[in-house]
Image (cartoon, rainbow, N blue to C red; front, side):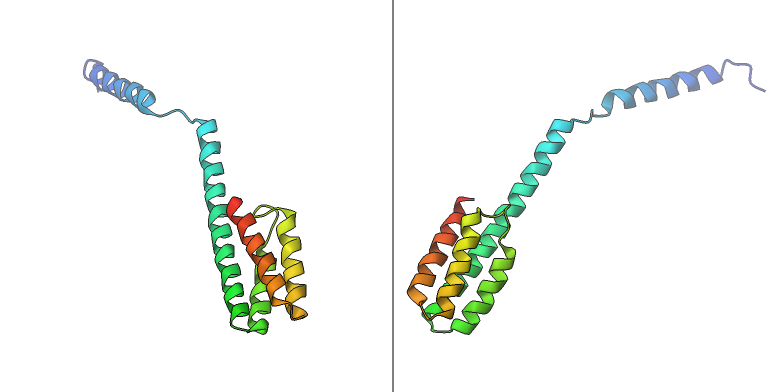
Length: 124
């Protein structure tokens, strides 16, 4: 059995480790966590806006090349990606108008609306 003399240094050592661990543990900063999450959301939205802008540019190219069916397919996909988080409501309305113009053979008007929509996306 132990006489108590040998157990004391071990207990003191364990207590010192516990105290050091408590001091070294960083405190949870909820504000920093929320800011980091918000930055990640903003970055994801910016990436989505950039991808959507590229898709709209591809639509313009299809229209310049006189491929209205391919352009309409790309426009419908893009319309589905336009959300309130990515662009203001005007952008979705412009996309609807551009689709209408393509269906009615009014390519210039459609391209002008697509350019406006891309500008709105870039402004965020």
